[in-house]
Image 1 (cartoon, one colour):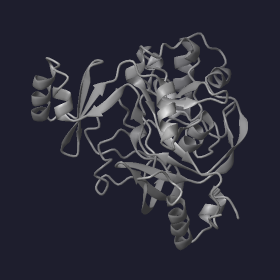
Image 2 (image 1 turned 120 degrees about the horizontal axis):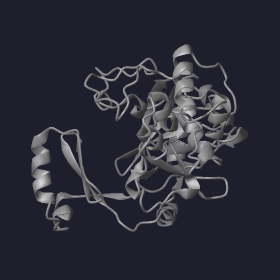
Image 3 (image 1 turned 90 degrees about the vertical axis):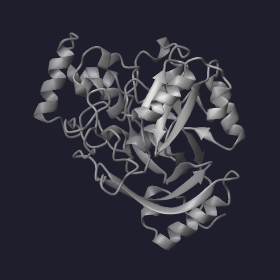
Image 4 (image 1 turned 30 degrees about the vertical axis):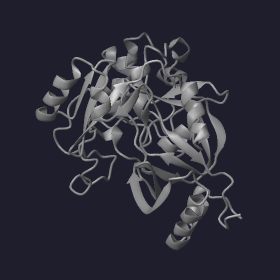
Length: 349
């Protein structure tokens, strides 16, 4: 009768885990299929978990837990390199107390109970919809045919015509995304709820990103300067920072990604891009963007630490959220789906 908390889950045998996932599969929306167990390891955390698919999109099982979220003080403290950059950078903004400055950028400390859930591994763009070549040509956009032909011969990974269409190379295939003007988040929530899905809350997002860590970043309090970061250099070599155990020789799907975009210890990928927001729901039901600040800090010429604080820190909140114009940010908004399993028991009752 025990719920699927992290402690209980880790104590199960592989056979019991398989049986639990198959029982869960029977309760899921139509078309969702259990694919088996897979182990993910990163930032010193390791999880063997169940992988599910729905319309070719991957979901992973995330066990629940009682955790402390939010940030107000250092857990271990910064190393010298991190401290020097942080103090030097924030002093340019007239900041005297670094700790107070950081705390003002973070969500408040609170105790929360996170229920078990299935979480989509990758985000979905709110302002973009994927279309076939036939559907794209039907739009009769004068620039699309030439752009598509040139993109197929270019060797580029991605091309975007601002607020029009986007082309992405995906394992030898070209994915076409068309800008979806006029869509609203409320419509997305309504449609996903009707299909049996929800959106992550802010509490759930911080848990699946940091795993309940009490440090500023999921790997510790010091910034990892070995990381390859989007906008600060192309990953010309396979990614392999101090904070990942991904083997680029055996992980073809992920070897080209920047470090912050690699799957974490739950098998979940994050944008790792301060220009992008992942939309979650706050405690009051209002939208709470996570994982970015619209590029405000990186555009200000900050070093890697402050530029990527919105994407790398577990608990960052954009202090300008009440001033954001969602229509202008539509091409930078993303979300992911979740199925909460709080009522699922080990004995299937």
